[in-house]
Image 1 (cartoon, one colour):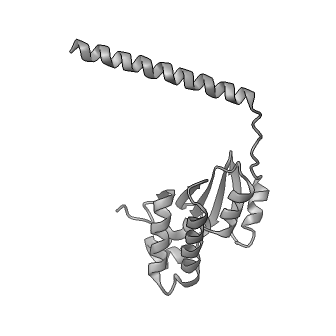
Image 2 (image 1 turned 180 degrees about the horizontal axis):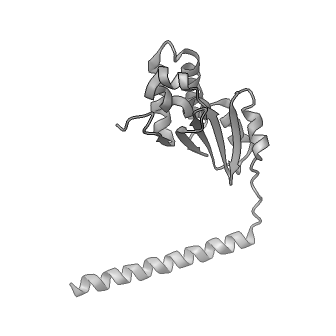
Length: 181
């Protein structure tokens, strides 16, 4: 028993030594290199990317763009939990979001929040920078475009978009609109 404790302490000390060495080297590298500030958009600049969408606002929260969209009560009644879940992904996987990430390298994430006209949050999804590459962005735009264009007639397209989004974002749904699975 005593040997195991001694071995653990030795390994722990070695790991601590290497962590300290790594931290020291990282600090020296930062001090020796001039790091340029990565641009982040203002709320107004970010909002310009989504200007074609009515009932939408954009606010910056640090280096995260928070896009808030009003989702109609009629849409939520008619489409139920599927429409509540798909709401953020319709706007998140868009040319506007992709362009924001491209134009502002300091932007860490885009979060889309859907609310009712009364202000109740329905759903939110956050897409972190770097989650999608060139190929997966093309796929995301295709899945979302099909859902926007044909989702009313082909509900499976909305389901595909929800699945795509849930696999690639951090998301939350209001249990009033979406039952837990």
